[in-house]
Image (cartoon, rainbow, N blue to C red; front, side, top):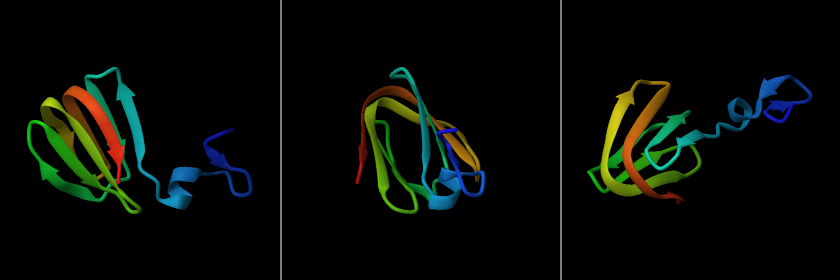
Amino acid sequence: MFNVDNAYDIPRDVISHECLIQMTGKDEIVLENFKCIKSLNEEEIEIACKKYLIRVKGTSLCVKFYNCESMVIGGVINEVSFL
């Protein structure tokens, strides 16, 4: 399977500490394996991951759900950047 390391049957995101991102159209992003929110306003949200920052730009952005494992960002998403 594509998402599993062949030698140990462990998901690759767990081994490499990568952030998982799932987008639903331009309206919603679900993030997993992040560290924290670095900045937050209605036009830009920056999320720190282990290896990089993720910047989400758009309009009417908000964090709809947040816990230690996942986060849901809603609004009109125009751009997602990896810094």
